Length: 66
Image (cartoon, rainbow, N blue to C red; front, side, top):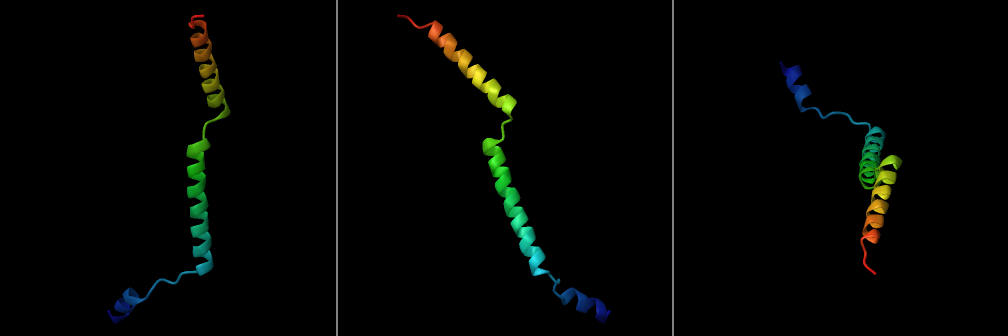
């Protein structure tokens, strides 16, 4: 029984190099996720949005009075 109590009180051994690299990977992934949210539209979606914007502009120009 005394052996089990000793294990409960011992701290977990951590490799600092691995912990530092894991923290850096997590920070890079968070930054990448943020950038994906900002610039994450595919080329097809961007082109579709630009085409829609151009169509709306053409319609508006066609309805203008001189």
